[in-house]
Length: 154
Image 1 (cartoon, one colour):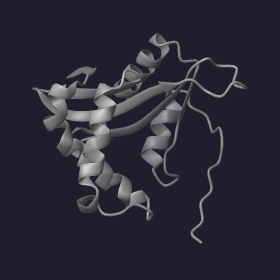
Image 2: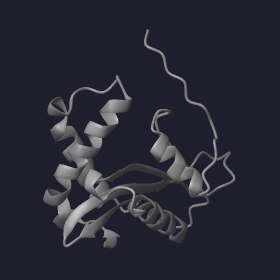
Image 3: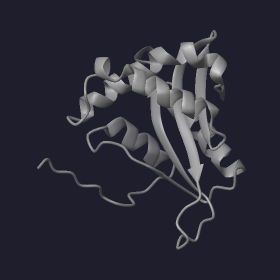
Image 4: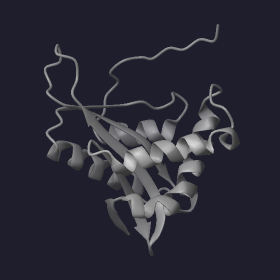
């Protein structure tokens, strides 16, 4: 297995795993529209993620097949923050056939190294409260409960 930063040359390979990851996300959220209604929007943002300097899409490859993906990005926070740059991790997804092999941990560690190399001092992420596997993975990597995000339909 190899992990590297994805480029626009990988776009076609990444479209399938992006849709698989969003299908998984829909299981946890009743606020998202079906993937069939949003494919082009997801592809639009994937292109941005692949081209913006402050965003890194990292992929795990097995025999040149994409088996995992994660997005890391950084930004300049509000003036009141003690950090000059903050990071955000999202969209970690591993093909079901390759789960429980520490690929998610390796991708997350790779993303964190990239953020640190870019002088990021603090990293946030959000996961659905019912996504126990993701919560366990990020806790193992040292992430702690930071805020509670509440939601309500009105």
